[in-house]
Image (cartoon, rainbow, N blue to C red; front, side, top):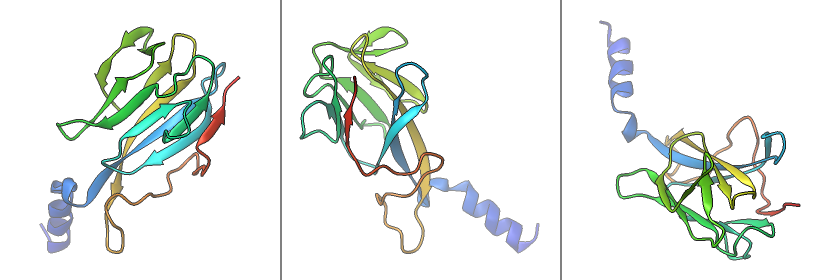
Length: 151
């Protein structure tokens, strides 16, 4: 094995030293399940979703509680979803109180409320990039607005 191949193998064998996870929340269209808006958060963030303006993601919907759900780091280095709302949080039609996040999962706020897809992506931490810094992620682009009106 030449030294370049050896260096590449060594660099790829320990991805945790050069990468970090970012979490992307995507609001899905209520009828077509296509992305409407998304938010990207840095590692270690606790992300609260609800109607109140002190949430990281604000959704104006009659069925969404002021503080409806929280996506937060779990003790094992992953993420968890915790229901805070009176109307519940659902996954695959089943009410959840607390659940480990997996990439691509879709939660619904209340039994008939907005749906949010949760994606976890690895971001490289290189020279000049600090861990926890936001990065542009295709294909949706970054929406700076955190308020969303749902009718």
